[in-house]
Image 1 (cartoon, one colour):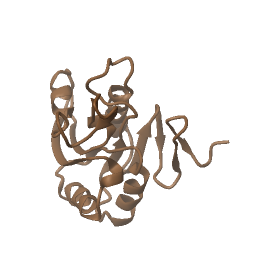
Image 2: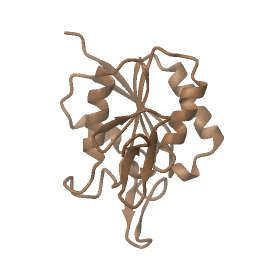
Image 3: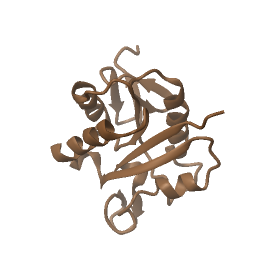
Image 4: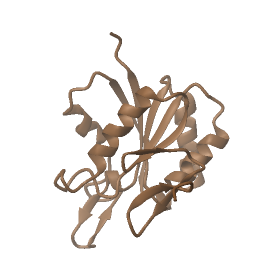
Amino acid sequence: MQHSKIHIITTGGTIDAVWDGKKDTAVIGEGLATASSLPDFFSRLILFADVQFDEICMKDSRSLKSADIKRIVKAVEKSPYTRIVITHGTYTMPDTAKHLKAHLKRHDQTIILTGSMVPLRGFSGEYSDAAFNLGYAIAKVEDFAPGIYLTMNGRIFMPDEVIKNLSEGKFYSVFDR
């Protein structure tokens, strides 16, 4: 059986943040969170998939600039892989998914954006949704047809339908009742 090849593109977001007690918040791109923790996390797993990592940036998604989004598009376009998971901050994840949908020239790739509400490292696994969201994204990227999707809270969403409910820390479809 051939192993799947999955390209994981990291952009920061809470999934790659660390807790800073002095600031009483999770921080990205400073202190301990200057590089993605995902390669280390995946190196400890026994997967059938071959995984390659590329780090675009380490930013809160609200701090992403158009140049960062263009770098994401370029990384996806140049990827030799057809299965791609992009880790992203949850605030603007739907915006980036819509941008990818509108600007990607390739249509042979299955692309899933995911993130978390609690950082992957520095918290007990029972409190972070990061590992679950990553596993769910990896499972779905292998099964879904080419296109752009978001996975959060154990669901798949299309870019044009997804919204984040800040008070619940949950994503929903605009079509949910």
